[in-house]
Image (cartoon, rainbow, N blue to C red; front, side, top):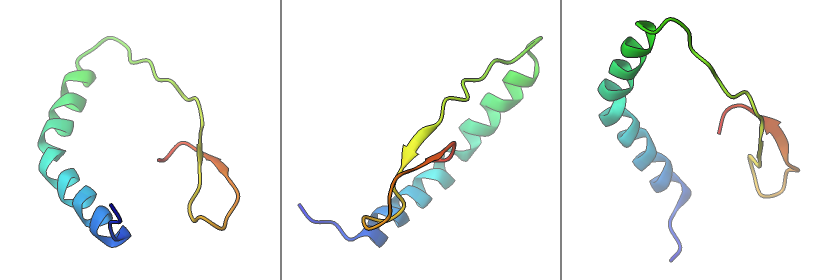
Length: 59
């Protein structure tokens, strides 16, 4: 199935808006903890098909 890229981007943006209240509550609960740990392992990301991979924390 071939889906237009802009459709998938729009779906993800809409999903992000819908789950934002849950994300906000998770962060509020995390702030109550004595400490927070994070995994800062980088992830290979290809921004366009013609560009080489680069390392990023944002996927």
